[in-house]
Image (cartoon, rainbow, N blue to C red; front, side):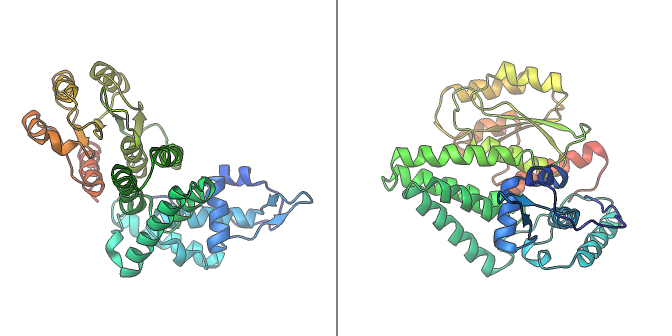
Length: 335
């Protein structure tokens, strides 16, 4: 949980460019712009050349809202608050967190209200329409706007995951062309990949190696896991797709990783997968758990069970399993 630093006085003069603000708040430039446009969290001044200029007051608001959101608050609830009210909210969350032994961010289920479910379906439909019409700018915009509505874990599970499945199924049925799928994949790869860097790492976090095995070229599932675990205090060591078992083992041992996660997507019946999984299990230290997930994981469930691998069926359950592993190894309580 992020804690609040007290600032005695705040300068309201607008002089900071947006990239400096992004650096000081830990937010991306696109996310700051999306928050401004949709939730009016700040109202920056403009230079003579129409560039945004922010004050220390703006930076503090953005920083506090980011902390509140990381602590499980909804952006729609905290965006209208005054600076003083934001400080009170963050202080309250910090006190509660201390009482709970510094637990990690609480997962807020996507099914918490019918309105959120409706919004999620609308978001996915809008994204699919942008893909079908090849509106790349709108697709990128929708991805960013959707992220500010809920926590990152909830967004990945309730929007990005279903979106990927819809795109894959629509392509299989001929509703989308291969070009549509390639466009969407390229933009999603950039978007999801950037999510890994939203958190600030100290270097003391437990490491987890994330990749796809030999023959598995689809990496979006692995990227989603890398973004997801970074929220919960893991440091992802991301190797990209199509990594041989020997290289995964070497990386895990050299980096001192506490876990390895593999994403299996396509082709499900690749004959190399059983060999790669068996080799990984035999070469990895028995103390290093091996997690297997993705659309093709179920195809190899018998082998997964025989090798004693972990195979949580959903991102939520994967997160719970990794949190439990992290807490056992580092003496924290489970979320």
